[in-house]
Length: 389
Image (cartoon, rainbow, N blue to C red; front, side, top):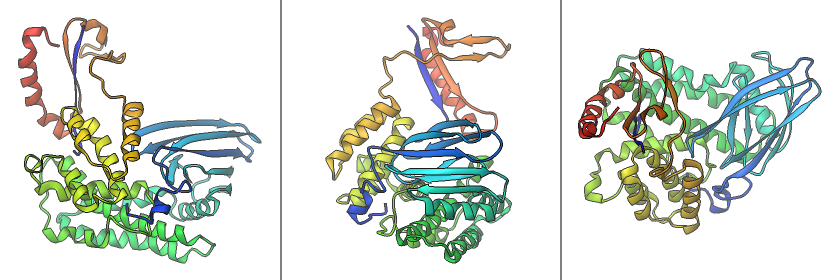
């Protein structure tokens, strides 16, 4: 029998809508609602699409690969929790739970994508396509933030620069002439603002990670938080909001002593803000799913001690944990892993039967990985009498 220890470097540790809107089958389904995307090839050439769907709620990724002959079509079905983007690199599709969207592709020339939409969310997809043709890619939503932030010597000037970037995307939405439903215009405005707030957190966070040293930010740096409440009736749950919310909770919880509050600091902040609102349940689902990957030792205790306003949401969380995360792993067989050793020979876990195996995934550019080495050395010393490799 092998005893396996797996180490990963840890990168980091809704708005309360009108309740009928937040948990409406039309927009949000925390159990996961099937979305159907039909892709038709109306061009003359074979359509080869590679992409991915990244579920931020689950922190899971689905690779996509379609080869569609001229005049043919294929169907993509995904379980979504809220309206979200499916990324094909050259373009993105916006779909949601219990929605069926038809995408008719005629050409994918950058800057002049020729796609028509019909069915659910077709007007919304036309808006995103118009924006993408203007900006030559959705990466424009994020790339300028990191380009400007990377060159800054004083990161305290970054929020103003970030706002100037966001102003351009908001102007496109304001000037868009084709009809859009009022809920979507409000939703998109808030989505862009939350994306902007998230970048204000993440750009210095990533810069600290790359440099391996703390960046000093003035308390006034975080003044943007006052403009981005976690409780907005104009917003529908989406990935940009959740990114922002998790960083907001992380930042707010830094001064909280977990031993004193006897719970995870971020869960403590959620309870302080939303204990009697169902939006708190949503944020707890995301946080606890993250914890299930970060710290197995404390995860189970915190899960059992966490209060949910709606008990059905706790059942949804349990289902997501055990069906998608696959916990608990203790006592289960390890996956088949084959890697090259330092001598360029193939090595599998079967080579180490009856040994203690420490399996650590790291990179030379990852400073938190390097800082983890002393802990790994202590771990080696702890098990060295049991034939550790």
